[in-house]
Amino acid sequence: MDTIKTIKTRKSTREFTDREIPREYISEILTAGMSGPSCVNSRQWYFIVVTSKEMLNRMAEANGIYAAPLKKAAMGILVCGDLERALPQAPDYWIIDASIAAQNMTLAAHSLGLGSVWLGTWPQMERVKAQSRLFDLPDTIIPHSIIAFGFPQNDLFEERSLFEESRVRFI
Image 1: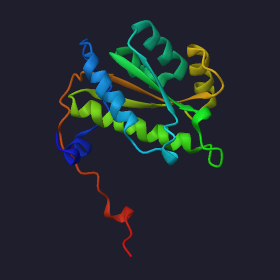
Image 2: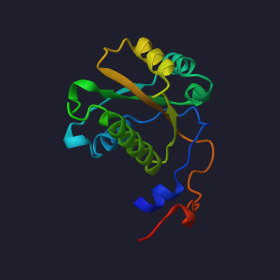
Image 3: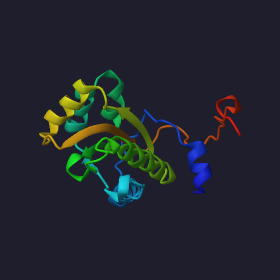
Image 4: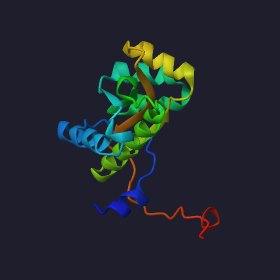
């Protein structure tokens, strides 16, 4: 799929079929996440891939009402920052790097015909702590966001323009 079309047609998907995601798709999605830029190439992210329905339900409960799409998803990825890999002079860049990785993964999923929805965790500390407890994470691995993935129940490829000229200033 053309990159610009992928970006223009990607939308959040909250309703999924029961179809499993092929392992090669999961590898492609993770590769896309790891292919984005990061602060001085520190690659300070960490991913937890979840396909267990029980764990997807527990993740949803830990993250609150807006994480309900996880209960219908074939897979969830907990995107985390790895503070051991963070640049000492700019330790908070892991937040941006995790965001870029998450965006790349949603775009890769869309290009493969999958739906996804980004579910915020950081900076809601009760959600961060709940996911940390659920996965027994060390203090150096910080939950950032969750992405729910699956084959969508509805058409994914409706192109729409979200351009707002009033939000741009040319000099």
